[in-house]
Amino acid sequence: MVVLDMDELARMNQEEDDKGGARNAIILAVVVILVGAYCLMFGLQTLIWIGAKQWVSANPWLGDVPQQLPASSTDPTKGSQEKAFNYEFVVPWKGPGKPAPSLTGVQFSYDSGQVVVFFDPDVQIDTAHALRSPTTPEAQKLASVFAGRPIESNYTLYQAVYGASLAPLSPVMKEQEAVRNNVLLLWKLSFGPDLESGTTPEFYSFDWGKIKGFQFGDPSQGRPVALRVFDDYDKQFRFIFTAAGGASGKITQDDINTTVKSLQPVPIVER
Image (cartoon, rainbow, N blue to C red; front, side):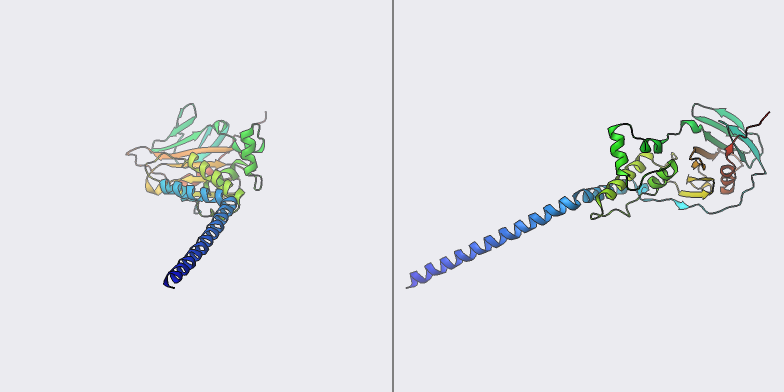
């Protein structure tokens, strides 16, 4: 009788083990299906999100977005007018500056110590045109990434790139938006700040109607300042403002604003 009871108990335990094994198998199958469904729906977005967090950790500047440049007073009627590459601008220092041409631009130096570098506008790359008119399979794939929100100009391209950050990324966002943000962050990493510096520069944007763009650096910190500027024809310009070492003259934000706001094509004189 005792043997029968032990056999019955063993059989019952075996049945329980079988039921437990079946239950675990079902749970595992459900988990596998759920993980598979998640990977199918959000796998790419999750990988992009994880990768972006690693990029920002290694390059904190990727997480920065430009702040609006504070308004300041300008007076383009006072100063010296400079001309280069069929464009002209006014600097608020006594001049004219001493020009030193190079392969990529011209540097104007002033007796009071200020230095302005104006780069040749014709060497600036028209990236937006390549996106609007893709001619290679790679360019066509890239253009398709921005199909939902196309890049219409070089200014909007840089606005999108410099404005990219980790904030809008999410493991469960739409796939195309995740890919778009991933491309923008990659470009931002590639572009880098428009200034070679040992520290991450302050980062600003400005929109003054016909002139708009981005500024890297704060002149009040006593370090060089770089600007990427666009006119109302989407023509792209680059400036660097700095001061010679030991010079008494300094550069202020008003000085920079005066120069940039006065930028225009050299007027055509009819004869």
